[in-house]
Image (cartoon, rainbow, N blue to C red):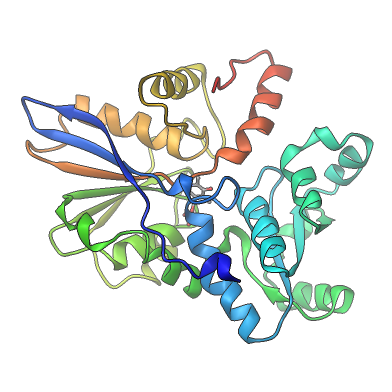
Amino acid sequence: MSFFDASYDSAIQNVYCDKTRHISVDIKREDQIHPLVSGNKFRKLKYNIIQAFSEKNHTILTYGGAFSNHIAATATAANICGLKSIGVIRGEELKHKLEENPNHNPTLSYAQQQDMQLHFISRKDYKKKDDTNEIKKLQQRFGSFYRIPEGGTNALAVKGCEEILSASDKKYDVIACCVGTGGTLAGIINSTCKHQHVYGFSALKNHNHAEIKQWVKRDNWTIFQDNNFGGYAKTNPQLIEFINSFYRCTSIKLDPIYTGKMLYQLFKMIEQNHFKNNTKILIIHTGGLQGIIGFNQQQSLKNKPCIEF
Ligand SMILES: *Cc1c(COP(=O)(O)O)cnc(C)c1O
């Protein structure tokens, strides 16, 4: 449990400075919190795991896809804290593939090594996973558990993400963050000041703003969703080249699903003079680097370029 006791304030690193227009980009290195409970996943799990303990519930159950950062993070955090974990995984076919060859999916075999019990369900059943009936079936099978929704977003997750920004981050004009469910963005919005604007870069083609609205009290935010390269987890060689060259220049690793796409788009916006002179931008590095091994594996199978760190 002491794993979640510390209140982390991640390091900040400058990556860009335009000397004539005085536009600067700094990155808050939430990816450095832990290699596998990285970035926003640590923030989202913190109060949920504390809550599970206070309910004396020693099993965490959650959901995810084949390469889910949330599954890897939950498996690790539960293991560190001495809790059991169950991962309900989308796609029945993965079960057999993983049994035949554990290397087939590095994220899922890693989760198993962390003692997460994986429960594979069909894509059709996965769509219904939030129905009371489906949850009851899981309770009959596994007994009582503390349930965390897919992607880890709930009120306690948003509360954890309100701890990403600290008092010294008030000097920034723009805070930028990636958006999946939007739980992380919501926490950030709640902890900003009036003069700050929050930019959410959506990893999904059509983001449902209502999901974010239910968690926030302010309206100083905008979602950008034309930066996702055709949809969730879709990439192209240009994006991979950008991630590789960004690493060569800054020694900062980006992932191809969230942070890589955000920075690609943000630098395009700077080039297109989207920002006023003297804008100080703070990017939140939400982590997600565990997925790169599996991503590269898929890329090489398709003879496509890999991420080179
Ligand atoms: C999960 C994840 C996100 C999305 O977080 P949400 O709170 O669901 O919006 C962003 N970046 C990375 C690296 C992630 O793993």
